[in-house]
Length: 325
Image 1 (tube, rainbow, N blue to C red):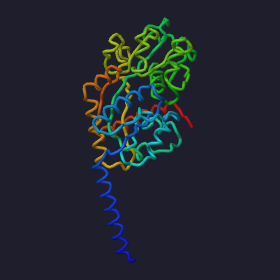
Image 2: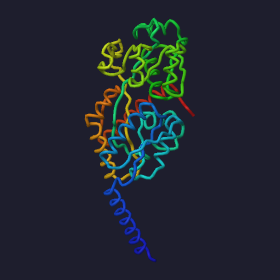
Image 3: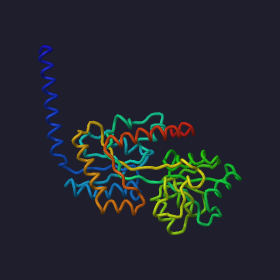
Image 4: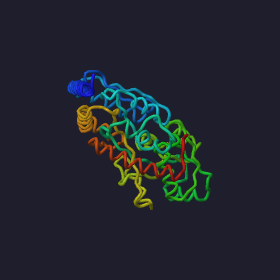
């Protein structure tokens, strides 16, 4: 077989593959879809994935199931999705950890956050809130900073783990307020909040959705929120800008990504379905009642958010010298 015959055969093979992929995309979805969650059942990412799955099941006419793959600072879940076929049947729901923070935390990752994923859409955004025990004499951020400066290194704070958004939020605040706090990492936010209520740690940042039930019960006190404006759920809690730190705001997010090589038509179908789901009154209201902000994007917008957040979180990680491996 000569060169021209080989070239013709290669072109025919590519054409056949393209036709097969196009046909596959046109029939999408024709089997169940899996959303992989980097955290255990019961957390915010899990709850959002399950609620989103209900609405996608209705609109796409295929069962959407949630697969929890916790561990490794979101590495296990991200690797699971990055190695899955690019056919739209395995998706990742993530906060900034997997795609925007881990590249700076790990010397080497088993996946490439940029090359191995195709951003589909955001689903929701969230703010961080600084909590202390309800019995603490600390009533506001000024009190907190005064106490911390009077006891450098002796006050501690809990987090959901090293390198998580809530730990980095606290480190950013430490740097901003010029205070020295000792980090106590936990395996998730729940045990950290439990120790905060028990008086084992002095403070912690957490996402508003996770912290709100404990604030509402009166077991912890919210000092400040990282949102640009006060939030309706906690109208009495000031922003950091109002507390003497103008210009500082910080937000996290949850979004859906697909493996590389997923056909653009499939990404488009998923993007439309997600945006319609979040815009639906039932899901939109559920997101709001959970103290998240409903927020969707086009794929390119989500990709740009990941890029800018990677630079922002990465600069923080580098400046603070935080490493996991």
